[in-house]
Image 1 (tube, rainbow, N blue to C red):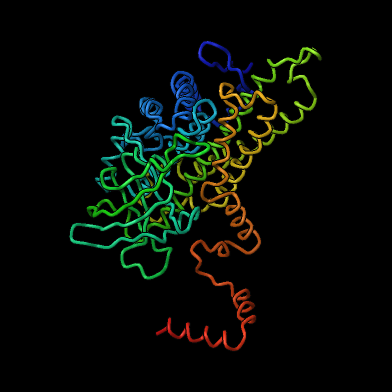
Image 2: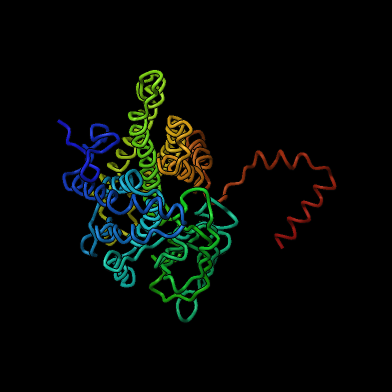
Length: 462
């Protein structure tokens, strides 16, 4: 018989464990899941409505996560963390948004993305190792500040950035368009073009920056959903000591593929699967209680409800099982999520080989969350507009995943090019000219325009 899922002292109002793929989780992960559900009931869920209304940063929820030792969830035990694997991290992310607060989930996601970049090159770097040991005890919430005002969701392509070697270390300059936990994160990982940059935008470097070394603009964040993430612009213009470069110069592309993308796409999938499940839970509670006296039926009795709800369950479960299988493969490839493997083999890239599957997970979960929350919202009828029923908040929050970089349209475009034309066709940094299109456009020019183009190209060569 399936174990009873509890919500405080009462049986859970939504879907039970028989609709959860618990077989992916170890006994210790199931125990952690139950503890996190309890924490969501006691602290994080009550805070969700408050911070959505006010737009304030959810510090009480972040502090509660630190008390459960989750800010260092994937940090190896030798550096003071829980040493959680990819499956466990997915469970944490999904649980946090399903039972707790999507905004807090996104904050946790961006903390994990920045943390992954640090873990990739932590071995032997005392500045990084010291921070890792402080994460939970000092509530050292962090973030990844990668987006660029010039390239939008193509966060791996920083145009307004740079770094140069100076006597004191590295002079880092960068403008970031959207940075989660803006004005609240105690540290950030950022990426710029490398020192001695020569025009190749795959030549990137990564830096660790603390909150007193950057300029945040949290007051500019006033949005429809994910309101408590406080994702405003950030400016960097700071000289950092040598050991605050994360990895060697030019290591940014490796960091993206092996750390940022792997954990970022995993967390996208987990968070938005959780949002979809949260909407299903709320709709079950509402439709099984809301009765129409003229028919003697509750909303859950109608065949149309069965069809809509059933499809939403099937779609969400497919996304969840896909994600957990992806995570299980990452665990298989990394000795169960071991971040210390790079100490003995700095060139190892076990996660990077699975980047395509991570992109699929992100697109699928963000799309499912957007569609499922809309379907569940409609089951509430006009009552869905009530803030007290919570579904309108999930509807607003669900839209963020689709447009967060890389957006679903960009993601599908990359997957499509990869599938049809090969991996090199993705061309992350615009290094491969489309000669067919170029020649076709040149063919449209008259003689004078061609001469002008020749003159321009000759000037560039000179």
